[in-house]
Amino acid sequence: MVEMGLKSLVRPKKYRSYKGDAGRAAPDLLRRQFAADAANQKWVTDVTEFNVAGEKLYLSPVMDLFNGEIIAFETARRPAFKLVEGMLNKALERLKSKDRPILHSDQGWHYQMPAYQRRLQARNIAESMSRKGNCLDNAAMESFFAVLKSEFFHPNRFDSIQSLKDGISDYNHQRIKLKLKGLSPVQYRTQSLIS
Image (cartoon, rainbow, N blue to C red; front, side, top):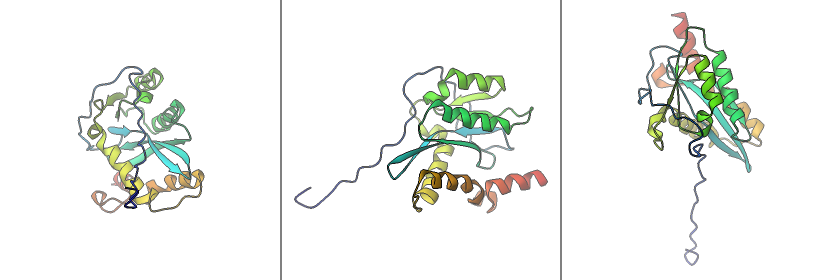
C-alpha cells in the first residue's frame, strides 16, 4: 500500500452501550411495530456519540413513534448513568397521569440499571428491550440517528461542543417529514391536537 501511495480509511468506532449484564433485561414488547395511533403510546430511546475537534458529546433522546418527535433529550460529555437519568426525568414530565407508553431501548447497561427500571415501574411504564446484538429491533431510533448525522452533523462544521448542543436543540423543530405531510414532528403533534 505504501509503494502504491494508498491509505486505508479507518471508520470511527461506534459507541456501544452494552457492557454485559448489569441488571435485568426486559422482553421485546415492541416487536418492530414502529407505528403508533396516538402520542405517548410507544417511545424509543438509545445513546449516540458525536466527536467535535477531538471532544465527545453523547446524546440520549426519547422519540415518540406517533410522529417521530424527540420529546426529551439530554447531552453529556461522558456516557454516565446521569445522561440517561436526566433524559428519563424530562420525558416523564411530559406524561399525563393516564399515559402509559411502552419505552423501548437496547440492552445497554444504562437501561438495565435498577434505578432506571424502578423509575419506569413507579410510573407504570412498560419497559421493552431489543434482543441482544439486534439493532433492527430498535430501527426507528437507529434511523433517527443516521438522519441526524447525515442531514445535520456531517454537512455542518461545529467549532465547539456548545454549538453542536445548540444545533441539536433546534433540529427537532426544523426537520420536516414527508410522511407527516411535510410538517415537522412538533407541527404535526400540534395540528393533531387542534383537529
